[in-house]
Amino acid sequence: MINILLCDDHAVVRMGLTMLLNNHPDMEVIGEASEGNEAIQKAHELKPDVIVMDLSMPHGKDGLSATIELKKQMPDVSILILTMHDDEEYLFRSIQAGASGCILKSAPHDELISAIQSVASGNAYLHPSATKRLMEEYLGNVKQGNTDTYDLLSDREREVLTLVAKGFSNKEIAEQLVISVKTVETHKGNVMVKLQMKTRHELVAYALKKGLLGLGL
Image (cartoon, rainbow, N blue to C red):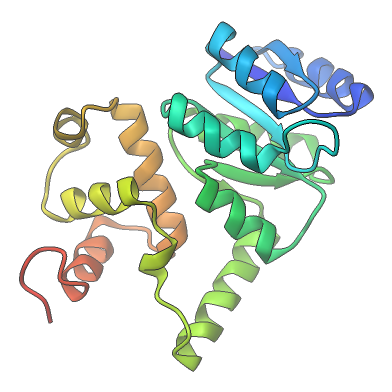
């Protein structure tokens, strides 16, 4: 069972999402919040597996600020950003804040279900149009020599990348960094998304080129 905390400033939206998710046999909405501060408080009280977080909430703490704070306090929790903004800026900011995924409010119901299942499993999720634009943006910047994707990674993600590239297992990385295996999987998923890579081999090659293994190219 995936325990979910919903955070959205519109009661009607929360009601609709609660009905939808509770109808799924493997999901249960265990709490609701109308702004970021309340979401942080409820997260500590209820210990959800996934927080579905609205990005824009004009009253109280916004979703981005709440995500940053929650990932510092509860690194194991998976946060799925729910947004109406189909824009690269919001996508990058959400990922940098530590969110495990980002989905549009206009997305079909089955896509939301899939996104929640994905982040609950420790994987990253981006809605298809965001993935396409992220790749286009990345390739365009690479061609112009304007980007270094390493800058997108948090300090913890850089540590995980280096250890993955050195051949350590998720369990070994978790022990070294004193975090859970699920958190390692989440960080690794975020690294994959940010660097647009799909395999450990690609990560090793990238780490080697960046000089993270002490060899350099």
